[in-house]
Length: 241
Image 1 (tube, rainbow, N blue to C red):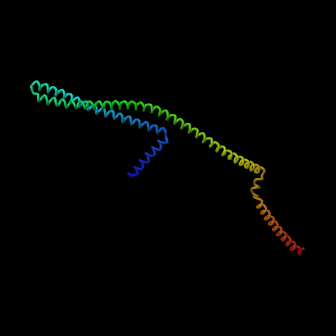
Image 2 (tube, rainbow, N blue to C red):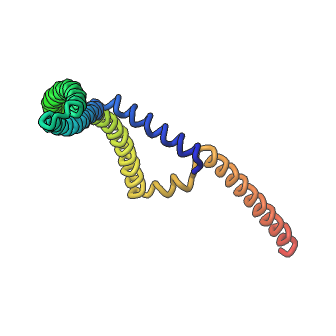
Image 3 (cartoon, helix red, strand yellow):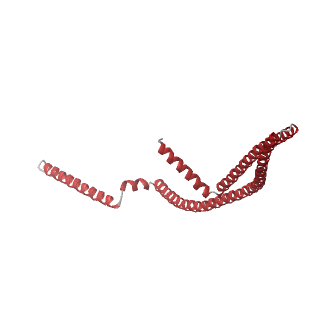
């Protein structure tokens, strides 16, 4: 099969599936249920992504806090050694990290809110899916029962029509059987009385009349022939006397 042929076959298959689903409520419900499950998976992945991002920011914030403690210690050590310049540089780095920590804390708080919202949505969606699944199975069962009932009703309707047709066929067959039985009885009666062979041999009225005329002519011809022969014999025998 060519690439174009496979493409056409795929498109037709998908269109056929859509048509079948549109005409079958059970398939449509199953499709909607799968869509909800896909949406739940998307929410779950979103929760995982937000949680991962939040954890990364928390790790980075922890490192910044460690550096803040380190710079604070360096500043204290520098002051004890009368190195105010080093203490200032350490405190500047400390403040830069503190600012970053503040920004990270705000981002982490926002991500936490997003995570909580997604978790709540996931729980709500999961509950809705469970309820939808229960209702789906109930509706499917009702639809299948109604469909079965409709098929039974249609079957009974078809059976009624079939019974009517069978009844009419039976009547016609009975009539033909009765006529055939009457004919057979008549033939048996003719055969028993010896009239069957005569009827079969004589044929119809025209044939019988033609046969009679032919027979009459044959008889007359033979009579003429015999009459002529007798007269001839008598003439021949007279002088001898």
